[in-house]
Length: 238
Ligand code: UDP
Picture: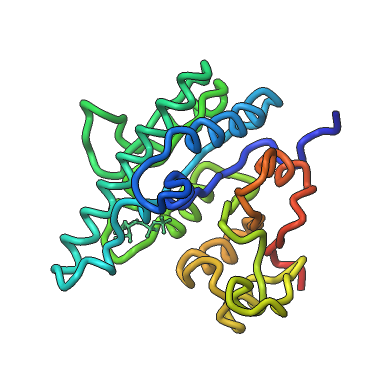
């Protein structure tokens, strides 16, 4: 088999990716499938960090009139629920995993400590970064970009429902065209809804390529790391 293109990656999963067909909560069949795909990477010697969202449970900005900070705190706690679910599915497959949380909850997860996270990765453990960035008004996409920079990840694998970045929503417009390659600047200037601007800017400043691909379909995470994702690559290729 050919060699993976990257040695250390940051996998960003939306909360919805764990929801399966229900669109809400956690579908453990789906969690198992994602864990199996991550195992494929680990078995190839790839070091995997992961950030998971919480859209399957709670999104702060949809907090129905709640105080934004409280709603965002709830969102960050919800990412911890997803992180523990993913950890459980990975451990069921015998993959050593650590959850590091940006909000201290020592009985449940390690606090985020960059050097310790890197050490875990070097030992072949999957590190799941929970509680986003630990700050309200941010997203887990931004947390993924931040942690990717901190752990020196070579790329972000951005798993989506759609199989890449399109010029318009392909679910609404069948004539939508998929981009194979984009620059960070394209994403910002065309206001493409891939990641929020804070996240894209962090990736741009730190030159972290983003591989956008569809999570549906067997083996797509593996394909992404082999450079065969057939999705969209975002980097500084001007
Ligand atoms: N959140 C936050 N700060 C962060 C990351 C997340 O306040 O650094 C909150 C915010 O309310 C967000 C929610 O957690 O809506 C869930 O994250 P996100 O919307 O990014 O999840 P995803 O869309 O990836 O499932």
